Structure formats: C-alpha cells, structure tokens
Image 1: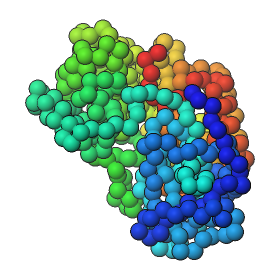
Image 2: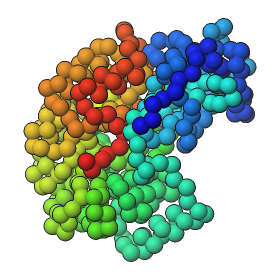
Image 3: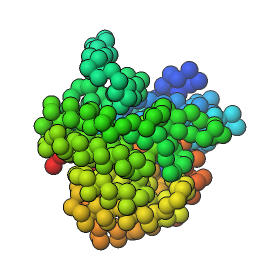
Length: 411
C-alpha cells in the first residue's frame, strides 16, 4: 500500500450542506470531529476522499466547529468504499426536528483546499471489491441468463434481488462467477441487533435497508449454486451467512447437508460460514461436514457492550468466544468480523480485553467492518468511552496480534 500523505492541521475547513443537499466548503471555519469525545481532527486521520465515497446530508444536525455550531447548515458525512476503515464520526448538535438516521456508516469529512477529505485509513485491497460499473442492462441480462438455467432455485431469486436492488458484491459474484459467492440460508435470528440491516422491530423508527430472505431454502438448492460457482472459479469461496438473512447456525443441519453435497461434487475452493458464533455445537456440526473457514461477527469483547448491541436470545458473548476457540482448535481459517465504531472500538478498556483474547486465541484475520448505525443511538446503548486511544492506534495494536483487512482472502 502507498504511504499516505498528510496535510497541515490548520488547513482543515468546514464541509457542510444546505437543506437541498448542496455541499459548500468554508476554509475559514475549522470543523470538529467526534471520536468518542468531540475534538479537533488530526492530520494523520485524514485522506483525500477515495473513489466510491458517498456523501450524506445529516438533516436536523448542525455541524460543530471551533467557533461553535454553524446555524443554517446541515452536517455532512460520508460512507466509505470497501477497503477503508472509518477513524472519526461527524460532530454535530441535533436539533429538535432531527429525524432518525438510517442504517449507514457515517464518517467525518472536511475540506482541504478545494478537495473533500475523510477520516479513514486504507486497510485492504482487492480488485474484486472495487466499485463496479456496468453498461445499461448488462448486469440485469447476466442475472436473467443465470436464473433461466435454474428458475426454481430460491437462492438464486434472493441473490438476484440483492444484486440488482442493493448492489451486494457477494450476491453479484454468483452471477459474475468470481470471488466470494453468497449462499443465504436462514430467515430467523437469535439476536435483535439494534443495527440489523435486514429486520428492524416495528417501533424502531427506521426501515431495514434490505429485505431478509423469507423462506427456508433446501440443501439441494444451496449445493447447486455452490457447485456451479466452484466449477467456474477454481479458488472461489462460497459463503453461508449474508446481510439479507438471520443467523445461519439456526439451520446448521441444512448447512451440513449442503456442505457434504458440495464436497461430493467439488473438491476445490473454500466453503465459508459467516455467523454470530452463538451455538458452538451447531458450528461443530458444520465443521464435521467439511467447513473450511468461518467468520464470526462481534462488536466488542466486553460482555456489557456486546449485549447492549446484539441483545442476544439464549446465548451470550461466552458462547461466541467458545465458537472462536473451537474453530481454531479444529484447524479452520478463522476471521473475526469486527463491527468498528470510533469511541467504542478504540476505548482503551476494549483494546486491552481484545488483546488478551487474541493472545490466547490467535485468529487468521480481523476484518474491520464499519458499524452502520446512527452514532447517537449506538452511544446511547453502549455508553461513551472512558479513555480513547484513536482508531489508527487501535488498528495498529490489533495488527500486532492478527492480520487486519476487510475482505475474505483465499490465502
């Protein structure tokens, strides 16, 4: 990766929006950022906005600056493309009319000269996960051709929706025949995550950005999609557990049968499971069937913070950690899907607990994943930090214990 070039700290200017979403830069006003505490951004926390950055207006939220709130303006935030990790949140004062924020990842942004800069660092690279551009109708035609080959397969119908409506890369990979391909399997879950992207409670005040798979698909359907993919992608990955579903371990018997069928048809590639790790015995069933890799999601190694976000039913963080240890002991490639959030992930207490666990249970990779949630909602649930070390420092400390990245790699 290229060495980042930093800018002088006094060069930061406010980037904000009017009510219509028009962005304006003001080099005379220094913006503040939120890193668990509201403070000045640092030069080594900012990079030029990379290709694929998406700007968001935060309605009803006045930007905070070194001279106080700026009335008449709305806070600007950005969503980062894949391969980058967020370092800071936008700092703002919410007005009484501020609506709830949808489930996106909100990153601090400012102006440096005439260019937008964002609080992020590059943490992985992969051509497969770069922003994609298709000619008009190209992706739709590719999806239709594949659906025509297996019109009754409910997995294909779901990943077609995710490909065309939500731009999901792992879903698109099913049709593009490359990389990691999605195998959604479970319509139910044993957690009630406050940031769940596929199912929100009726009184949550926000909509889920994706539609969860509605049916319990069969092992034969799963195996058919996986075998087709591995026939065409020698080092491909097929993955149970996607954003459009609940918890796959609740269907471990079906998954185990599908894995056995896949391995009966193909010996190549990697069979992966993305899971919350809530049921170690169900995970063991999948391992016995031939599972190669597992990616276990969590937001924290502290029981209180974990429970406040996941709101688990019938399990706790101890079960999750047991699943990690089990998968390591059985020789799987184990990754953690770490849902990161400035002011929580880089809390000194959090990092210390994480280091102790990773020292005793070394994993192959820690994949940093921006937690898509209204920051105010998350802080209300888990609390503000006592002492923060900064996201860049936190990531460097994690790197001393495990490889850090954002994507599932085959080696």
